[in-house]
Length: 365
Image (cartoon, rainbow, N blue to C red; front, side, top):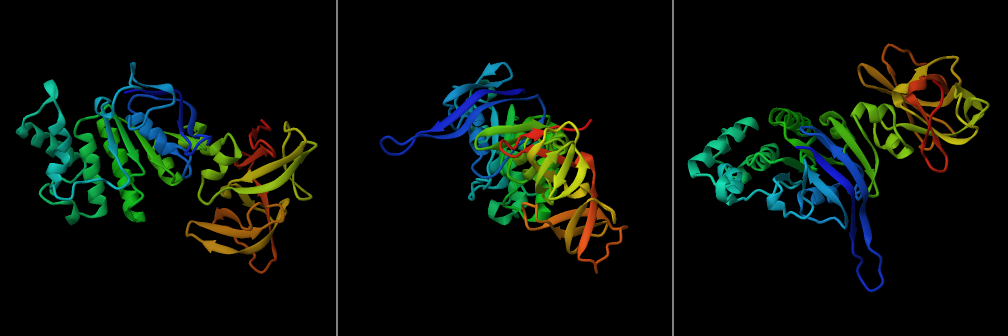
């Protein structure tokens, strides 16, 4: 089911006489093709959960329209939209078994969609097998692990075969290992069902690994959308560059002069095509090349051995953050007795942004 948001805005009214309202989402315009898994990514308060509530019908937009396929669902109540919603806290009924939790939505079906009890049980078993909890059907939520409870919540959302599946921070209550396992399961389930899915998260690792496409939001506005690798490799602005990547990107106060990029007094790279002026220069951790004659000279701070790679810890007067992390191959030998470390830079891992607007400045080929 194709999902379209057309110029959707949500303003929450202010409290008190004369107080201004709060714009939670502002002019959202995006289209999610049928069968895709898309992540809404951004920090707390960016409007991603509000967007999910607008899609589900739990909230109504102040302006704009929402379409499922060719159907305008903007004014439809949640129960008539055909959505499955999985909450952060699972919201399972503690007094019901897994089976009863899963079939609960089916008991509310009316008319031609109404199902007999044997049909409900058959459908529940099919979905439970899909999410690999079919051996837990007689247990109650309190007897399950966090990951198992999450699967029950997903099964309950899927049992009606919704037109759109909405996941609101579904992994935030799980430990790191279980989070990794469950996100792989969510991706598998989505592929097998083919249901258009919107996944809300503030965790860029989750978004990058699980989704066909990511939509990065800030203060209710879409900053960039595209394939995860595409957005990582070509951020539209400094916010997106900062938000994606682990370790985070290294940002320097820099300038372009005569076709060269300067960090401090050193010309570190060709920047032909970029206008002269003060800029932000951002370098991905994997964009550093250990080079004894390299133009970027940093103060050496130490090493973190990660097995296949090494993280070189350093600092520079022009860096925004006190620590620079450079990821290089473990085959390199770093002189730990030296007070400095020198790098050359990979041009495709260096981005330049306007100092005022923080928008990307394209340069070179």
